[in-house]
Length: 197
Image 1: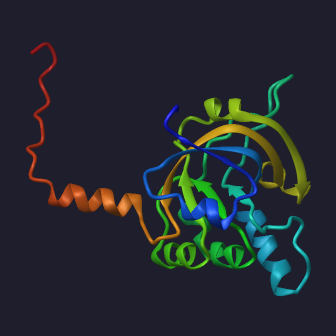
Image 2: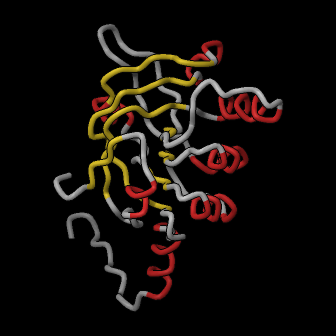
């Protein structure tokens, strides 16, 4: 990915300002894992006015529940979780200072608007490549909610972890733009040749 933008965490507003939809990026530094169960607990802490186990300001959360590592490995398969499942929890996280999210698939309208309002960025990692993505993870440590097992919050140190910007702080949406281009395309759809034809 020689043409990608290399991002170092934590993210700043200046860096996020320069990112636009379709940009290939790589993350280097610390990112955190969290899925449904961990998000639910963090929201409960917020509602009670209690501190979160991690400071979200400028941080990146990767929606992943990694499999157990093989002997000698840092982490198991670490492919992205469908992001829309986390939509009910995302806006309070952004309000708490979260700046980057990595998952797969699109986000709902309210979350897209919140990403714009809170000057954040949502990226997709390619689904089905968990065994390859884990090569970019140099260390993994459970830092909260250990009882949740694979859904515990982990602190990952990553190097050149690849992703693509889908929602930027300017209100852009790569997936919606792709749909729009498809609907308005006048190019003929190529026919599929029969096998052996």
